[in-house]
Amino acid sequence: MTTPNFPVQGRWVYQNDPHLFDTLRKQSIEHLRTAFGRVLGRADDWLFDLAQKEGAVTGSPQIDAMRALRMARASMERGFLQHFESGFDIEFDGGSRFKSIFFHSNFFASRSIT
Image (cartoon, rainbow, N blue to C red; front, side):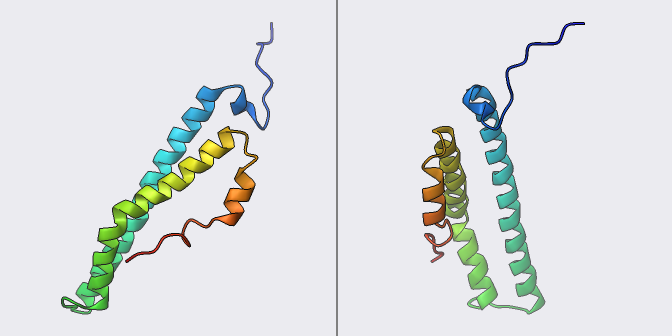
């Protein structure tokens, strides 16, 4: 029986196989998109349930928070995904810049909900 000739597998195998890295990137980004969407959806549902339970009227903090979440949701999702996409870009380029950018920028500190 002959052993198949597989390329050496290692920590940075994606550098030898860009298709593998691209597949990982697409699946990871899609999973993050779905998970973050569910988190925001649950937050919206929770705020709605809280407002209903307390009989909130227009102008109450729960309704205002729900409105702010709904208005900012698209930009939050876009920024969240761009953050991870840029991390994949940096890692694919060799990761040398990744450490300095990751530790000197904070995704949530640079965004605010208004």
